[in-house]
Image (cartoon, rainbow, N blue to C red; front, side):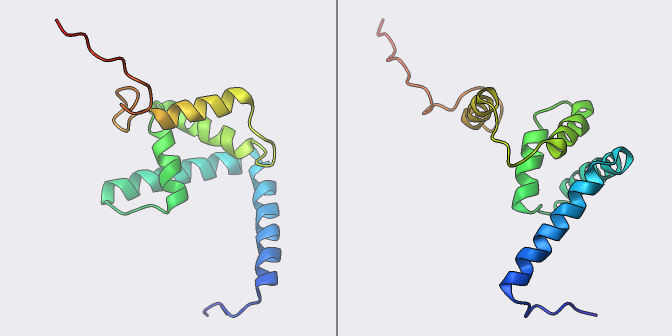
Length: 123
């Protein structure tokens, strides 16, 4: 049975609030949170292996998790799920995020335009 997509926009906001409340409640239970984290990581790995594109949010998440060692990915994802999204990130976290955005995609350091370069000496 297909869902009726003609629902009013106000109903969509109510559904989203209910869905997020249920999700937060489920994430407060340890073994369900661990199951969700493992399942999400497995889904991202299989999608990459099969060459399937991920949704934009998951693609960004996978890009950030790829910088971590495999054993730390589940811990980092779980810590992200436990954090309160309404709480503004600390200054240290904002600075770390800005540093990561400046890094080159191949992980070899800063992009050439991010830091002013000194002119080379002529010898």
